[in-house]
Image (cartoon, rainbow, N blue to C red):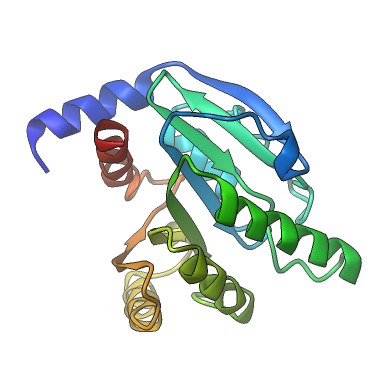
Length: 209
């Protein structure tokens, strides 16, 4: 990473970030020509918290203590450089089968049709690693042929040795998925671990489109 890229990333994520729209269907999503980054993961994995940490805002993306509360795709525009999409969580048991199927259809349709999508961030809870619900989603990401980066959230909630073990297991698991990037990045919104590096990686997408 060059100093120039680091500086650009700091300035980019210190800039204005605005809520654009919330959509419960693909048809309701506004079109965008900006490179788009999507956050996907299990309910309560920390998607909204990570978005808030990246853009230095406490309440830009609403954080709910109730898993499964987010039921739409929320879009945020970072300056005039990036669009950020917060996707509904998956794998929450206390919803109806019909609701779960609707969420899966929404995510699948988004991945297949969103032309501005450049990268998917697949969030995994460091306390649990890759679980069955994640394994069901990764083939959808492979099929969409959109490169995705696996991230561990809540890295501060485990010991250093536990984190190393979870990281190693996650890397081994994603190796069989053609659309997954080779490494897994550990992050924590509490300590700031991995946040600066993630900003740089996303800033590169803003530059190169």
